[in-house]
Image (cartoon, rainbow, N blue to C red):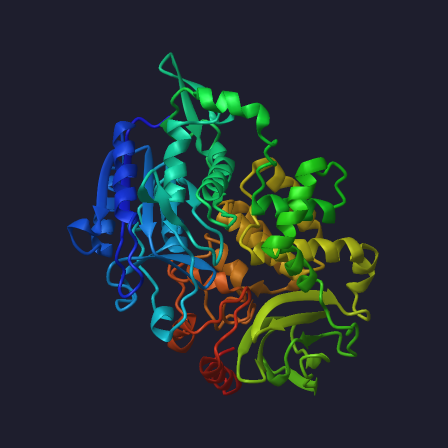
Length: 583
């Protein structure tokens, strides 16, 4: 376990003209004090002493990374947050007026993986609200880890978040004082741990009781649910966690669990507590069913899973992902069908040709027939009203696009019945459709994870079987592998899909870290920008330069799983594409 440990703890009560918080700075100080008692070297940065600047945070992080002799680094933030382009931004004092007055969560986590500190723990006690105005959307944030080319050992980055996508993080009166529920429960995990949280480890011949990072997620869900109920808040909190570290990695020791006399007396009268279920459990159960696993949950756990599936929108997301048009055949073997809106125009790269056979009307599908000169092309679709998306057109596949509120929420690639792929697809169709829908729903809600080694391997093997039949599954797998820092597996996806499609999907090439650059003149790369919205967050981390028209487009994306440009930017991109400026 770490011998030298550092922490940067940030608390921002007042951000621009947003509603001031009461507990962020105090919570940061309390967390910093606790870390100090655990032997950490701590730098606490709050707006009690003045505005919090990105440079101040960067300098604090650098002071721990540069020496090269720290074993663990904790980054904690409490304050306001945005959810932009399928990623989190921590807002600092001058946001949103200053577009750089924020911390980019995804990019910071990516740089942290190469910082050389074996264990990095990122803790976000922030809401994930959706930016609503053009000014808000231009906030991109800063990266707080050094951007250098020094070869360092890889870190395992653990992430703890107070809320899932679009959900609030609550501060409520606890013991007569406004406190963050998430931070209160996080500290409570060590001060008053449940027995199942504790693991005894041996350090220098001494047995000590600790709380491994791997055991914190379910406790936070259970504790926050209890606290909200006790204080009368009618909301089911959904904290999130992604833990890559081993079972013996921890940030704090455990005090011995205690049982209050009053609790012991009252216990027999209490109703049995329901199983602690997280949204990722719902996703895992749905994916397991899709893979025909027979050892699924039963009893109360199954009932709670079903309830959360309905209430969280996961069930609805699966149904949406299974919504495809009854278009199964093109004489050219390749095309697209669009549900939910009308097609205004379509264009394809590299000398191909796109025919809008029928524009559709939102109810009846819009249909585009593609004449391909190569195995893969970039395709730009402009919908009624001007919203635009960019997708890979792949020989032998019909792309089924689902649009909701002018946002692309799902894309499925299904072999045309007259293609050579149909014979392999048809006998597996039912199971593949279920798996694709379950994975797509998990990705859409941000809980498709491959951080559990054994389960990751099992699921990956199933997806690997189907990558040649549905490129969207390979795409999703590449993102999950990247999140879990399974770099060789990302490269494996890239090579496998390249052999099958004779093309590189932009997103997969972007995620393959050993590929240092993307040259858009390389015709094998399709399309010319990320297909998934979250891919835009990796451009700086992967040092990929796009034309200014495209690079600036990341500030004009709709909050959707698949890249959807707002009308004005979409028209500019469509025109540039048809004029040959993009390929």
